Image (cartoon, rainbow, N blue to C red):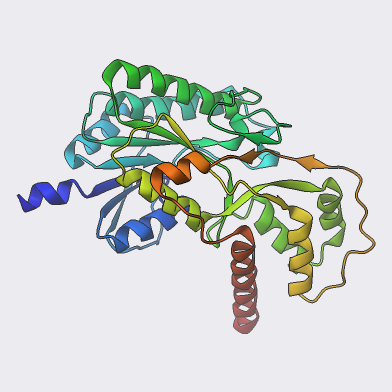
Length: 316
């Protein structure tokens, strides 16, 4: 009886070394879940109650075997490739084929399972750029191999879900950051530019006048934890702040925090805005509340970068 109860507490996380994988693993660990982190390469990262397993998600038989042996309460798929803005422009057909195949494998395995939940990850990029706000009724628009992969994954999930009456949901995540955010993304890049006094490139970003929907990753992962626990089975949910943040305000904050000259000489030449996500239905369904904001994440990232810099200096 105890063994059966424990098996129900198994959670599988693909991409467990990524930002969301780490945060969700720590959260689940505190709740005494047993986490199996599926990764491409093993690293020296240890979190209580987490067992890391090297696995190729393209290998259907291998992933099927581990899922059937563990009988997990849920699997959350963070393991897809997540390109930065600049990488998005270079994606090709191979990117689509690889990532869609891995997602299809998981969908095909979970479709007939009645007691296990599959949570797939979607992106705000699935919506057409230029819309001021999007909600669950807003239609997806394919623009890149990345959005094609995400949209076709959702459509295939719906097909299998209807056929087998499966427990599968796509969580559509808008921008979110934390101290675990990959350095290739915008806010960690801003901090690096400021630390390096690279005001030329910083001004180029400032001139873009970027704004969008940004959250703290811990808030997003708290929402995903509630999705894991709920018995409700929505097709898709939006996880976002539903508030507009201007990157230039973050730049100003970082310049001040690092005691650099202000940016009165910076000029605005453009206005580049991305959509806000309406997460009101998600918050109501899951009783989910956002407790932090993006500036908390910015402050934590900036402090971490400063600490790392001091350690490097002391080692010399």
